[in-house]
Length: 306
Image (tube, rainbow, N blue to C red; front, side):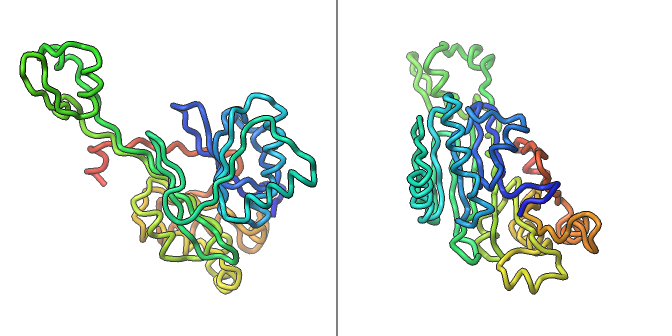
């Protein structure tokens, strides 16, 4: 539940090259948080919902309704569990809310839920009291930088042929020479991967979903000493989140979704959960409201150094 210092669940993934962002969960008050942030609601394109508990969906209709009143939203696609569509239809019916822009709800199941030329989003079923899904956002690999100077030196005429060479195709020139585009491109730009897992207790599917991720955002509702509560309520402890990160070989763990019992001044505080996780997985940070993390780009050199 919300506290004086923290709101409930919602994570924004910004795609700067597209001037758009995607939301993962939409707890109560999310639209107010967006107004206080650097995000522009007109750039919201997709919302991915993990499960149907209120702290993850109670802000959804308010955000969608306000976005329509703003008048500058093109379309929003929403992805989530089977009951999500019925929930939104009921909310709209009883509140007589009408959207002035297209809204489409996609019911998800394990596997790929969205794909375009640049990204693939897949999900897996986690282990919680209700059906809950974790999401993996994978940026597709891109060809390396195309060496225009070298192509010019080889006498390759500019034009559409450059586009084919940039994609690594083998092209036959008018003079009969065969040019392998891969020879004119630098190392492949490896796509980044972000994984979002909440709500769940430690489970194999979260480890599989997070394999080799650049960033794993994982719930850490309880401290290690409260593991019995975690098992009863099917939530994770800080140490469980760290074990998922370690087992999946991720590069960065970001913990979120903390119980209010660890508020400042209590016997255990959130900083203690961070210490517990770091003892297992040192590359761990704590999420806080309006905190941002830029996912660094990958390349063959950094991969070789890992």
